[in-house]
Image (cartoon, rainbow, N blue to C red; front, side):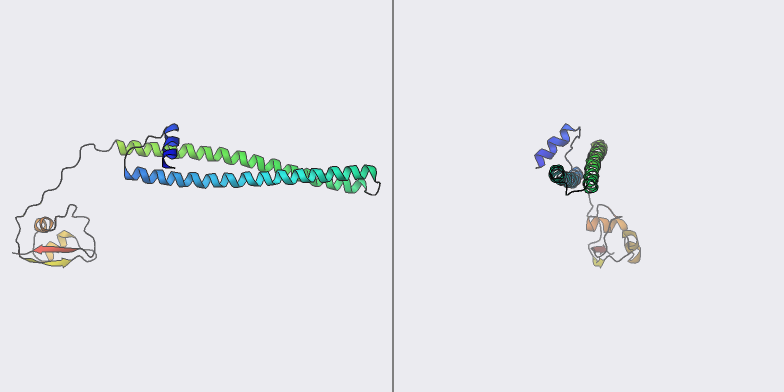
Length: 194
C-alpha cells in the first residue's frame, strides 16, 4: 500500500524527502484519502439504490398504464398521482447525481491543495541547513563532589545553580545537557559543589 501511495504522490508532483515529519504527513494524507474514498463510495451506493428504485417504479407505472388501458377500473387521477411520484423520484436521482459531481470536484480540489501543501512543506524541509550541527563537547573540569537534585516545576539550570551556589557550566557538563532550556520536571541532575 505504501508503494502505491508513493507512486500516486509521485504522479501528482509530490516530492518525498527522507524525513520522519514527511512520513507523518504522508500518513495523514493517506488517512484523508481513505476517508474521502469512503464518502464517495457511500454516495455512489446511494445513487445506485435510487436508480434501482426508479427502475422498479417505472415497471410499476408501466404495468399500471397497461392495466389502465385494458381495464377501466383505474381512474385517470390515480394515474396522474403515480406519474407525479415517478417525476419526484427522477428529480431526486438527478439531484443526487449533481451532488456526487460537486463532491467529486470538491474532493479533487482538496487533493490538489493537500498536494500543494505537502510540496511546500517538503520544500521547506529540504531547504533546511544541510551542514550538521557539531556535537556538543562537555568538559570534565568541574568539582566531583556534590549531590543529586530532582528538577521541580519552574526550575531552570540557572535557578538550580543559584540555589545551591554552583555554576551553570558545571551542571551542564556534569549532566551532559545539550539544551539547558529543555530540562524536564522530575529529571535528576548532579549538582557539583566546591
